[in-house]
View 1: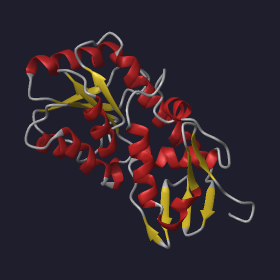
View 2: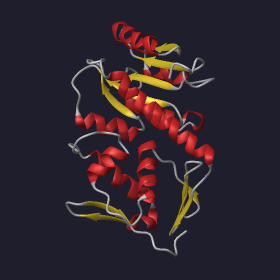
View 3: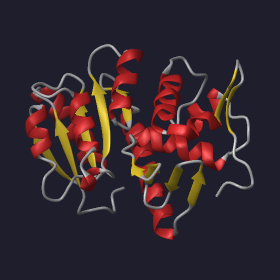
Amino acid sequence: MTADRHLSVLIATPDDDRASQLQQVVRSRTTWTVKRARAGDSALRGLAGTPPALALVDAELPVISCEEFAYLARRRALLSNIAIVIVEFNRMEKSRESSVLLAGADEYVDGTSLAGFWARVQTVLLRRRRRGESHAIGSTFHRVDGLYVDIGRSFVSVDGSPIVMQPLEFALLQYFLERKNCLITRDELWQAVWHKDGPVRSRTIDVHVCRLRHRLGSASRRIQTLVRRGYRLVVSESDG
């Protein structure tokens, strides 16, 4: 990551001590320019111009919450590739993790233990970089019922209408398409899409699958739930 000399990171927190800790981590591992915002509204303004590669956002962001920040940022076309990491300096909560990921953040991390913090951030950045490289190589198209997916352009439409999807929803759909007609366990999704180790301990996957089905229109029936086993996307040879 240190070779990316022209990249920048936005640190959004009202607390000077927290900002200093995060700046120290970033500057000890990169040559990136560091920008600072103290509230959610100023953080959104800080995304104007040349967007940062990474936004480190305090979970206790004032004026505009961290969830609102992620939600609004993801709906701006030029900001779709920013890595958004929500940093929790208080007690980590599974319900909060679900809400920030649903809003569009890439990761929810513990800010009280910065030892392994940057490794989590690097995983997010690497995942986004690989996604960008795969898009540059070429596009993969899928047609299922009224659903059309262009993996290369991160474009989804249902019955001819474009659909805005959160990054994790799109990643989940892409994985289902890559493993079509195969049984996919929840633990497999947890590792492949969320890049987490160990068994699933929250309803994050169930919530995302439910939201994905809601967006897919008539094609949602293709996602089967196999009780106590996992999921399967059923696609026939006649589908595009």
